[in-house]
Image 1 (cartoon, rainbow, N blue to C red):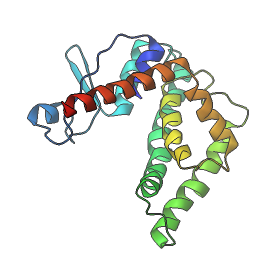
Image 2: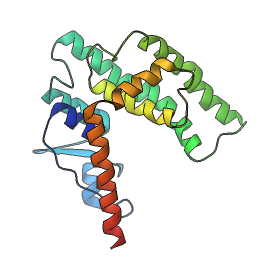
Image 3: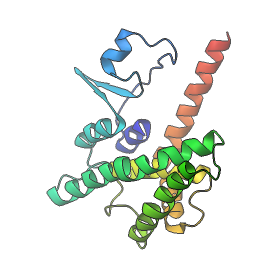
Image 4: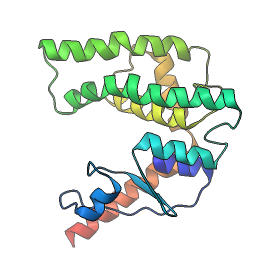
Length: 195
């Protein structure tokens, strides 16, 4: 998400790896939960993807409009992507990832929460729209990435507007470059560990 935004905005950046298992106090000083990513920008250290994207949006009109209405609309959808859709999709995606899909009441609740309470409403909203708020923004980076993981497990099969929206996002040159660079970064880290 962060690389994608930086590529969309044409902002210079450098990526550093952090160890997965041995995260020390220096790591926790930047990210109190020991997660990634975090962004260092001068004296600022910012954690959480949404907060980082809002910060980057302040640096580029390609990510966040400057007019009050456009800005408000994007911020609203940033929170919707994180709180309304990702919160519903995260358990659904993890259960698919770990092969925990079954007939249990827990699975049925998780599945219906996403498939009946979230995606149908988003499907209707996206009908006739290219992007969430008119122009592509940080809200689209978040929403497309959240839905991309759902689509990985064919969760958008009954939601063609959502699926087409994700495809538009992933076809963007900035996403293509960010994704390729991130995969190359992971591959280089794997090679370094093997040596």
